[in-house]
Length: 116
Length: 113
Image (tube, rainbow over all chains, first blue to last red; front, side):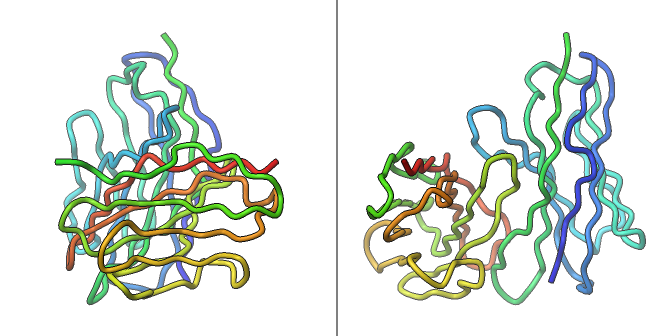
């Protein structure tokens, strides 16, 4: 079974600064996907960024980038130029890459507060 | 294009009543997943369905919970004889055949009084 661990229950960052959220996972699979989801107060789950495990290059989406360390089973999220709208819960998630669709395994989340 | 729709958004039930949660996937998506989020927790997988079939229900409690995704109409998550511990947000996600990305609905918040 796969597990996802987010060791930082809460974090805060000043507006315009950079923050990094940690995520580690445990799996015996070699092919998988990793995701970061954002959940604002509206509770809608919003996909922030995804990484395919077979790709060595770290994914980047505008102000969001990841540091994917496959050997260490680490997948951290860096948010640059933090904005007030980034305030939300952030969930790291794992998905096994199989012959068909498979469910997501989520961490417990990190609550990020961006301070003006 | 409409995204994943869930209704109701909020549902209040008394202990012992039944709760029915509905999920309409993105048009053309044939795969539906249900997840439960307890307060201050991450989402936990419950069940994965394709049209008319349950593919994986390993995360769903054996008693009182059931799910279906009929050929026509929305997917339904049914909770019989609800208890206070069933109070949570229930999220539905859908994906097309062979694609890994899941699109989430806004969730249904169930409160059991």
